[in-house]
Image (cartoon, rainbow, N blue to C red; front, side, top):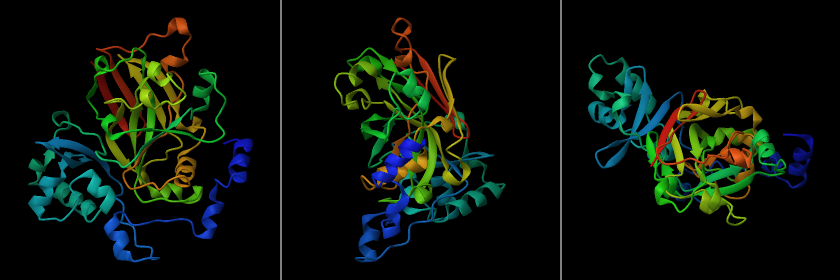
Length: 343
């Protein structure tokens, strides 16, 4: 962040000094824990999962938790039954309640020569959105310097926040039904997604990333003609299926979010290619700033912005909008390849 923006943050009290007064709230992961802790107490936060690549997949009519291993995708629910382990078996439960022995279960199943039936072939599972029921889905606009320039916008002095809703959530190998949306100017936006792991209120930049559960590949799929109907972007950003995330969440200890290659391709042609080092506001700054405006809860998602190369940044005579039949791929280094199609 350049000197002028940092000065603006300091003058407005939006940088880490607020924590010196005791404003950081690690908080309970659930209302029940908060109530149990008693007024004025600070309950211990659940121990977050570490050193894992996690995913949500469908089994029957429900979503369940999977862990990517060298032997395949561990079906955590089946493994828990096999070994009589009381571990989280959904992503929401894992994020809210902590590891609770999941790491040990993964190690046990991986070492068990008779556990092959617990591991699934990735190509045969149906992915779900990594997080299926976040309380909040926040997005940051114009947050790559080169993207701001390509759209003829100044670099923002503070993060520009807007929202999506849960009905927008979509998964790896999913389909966006653009034919059902009253719009014509559909555009891609490759994005790094922050997944919150602890309740965060008024946290400093220095501590902000310790509240993050993990990171995922995302795409803030957008209808530009809806987005531009008014000064409020929401209707162009949160139609059904427009919040793509996956295939995995990689736990935060395995990722440096400030230096990741990020790309988006349409029908095999690379359209966006950049690095998260071009972020105007990095992940720590985004989490800290947002936590001063609202309480972030475990499982909340933050789409951190898109790099240059979007269709809306092309000269008008070269803007060919996306259409049914197009296939898109979003790739972020260490986080995996998110694929989806349009219908």
